[in-house]
Amino acid sequence: MQVALEYERRPKTAKQYARIRETIEAERLVERFLYLFPNYHLLLLVSRFLAGSTRRIYFGLLDDLKGQALATRVLDSSGVRSFELREALT
Image (cartoon, rainbow, N blue to C red; front, side, top):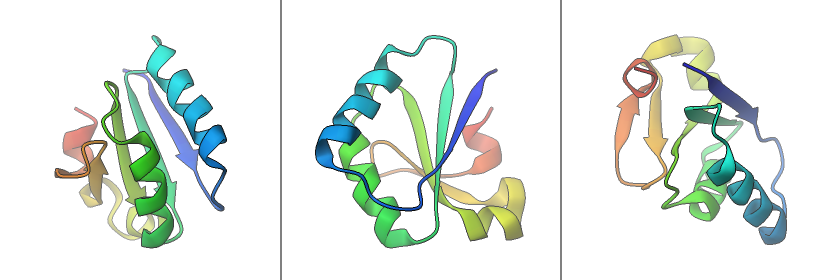
């Protein structure tokens, strides 16, 4: 399984996120996308732009990943469901 990892330090424009979403929707080699953030505020902002994607996109905090590894809680692109990272990647 192919997983794409993105670390978002600063917010982009709505237009940039629209292009990113189009790229993710068109991608066929990568099965899952993991977006990591330095804070919850940025996580929520970006997850709103990518909400409802037909692809498996997960959002989490970098510090959680450092401390909890595969037990890190991540949100899916529906913005409703939360998983442990190990579950999201299986």
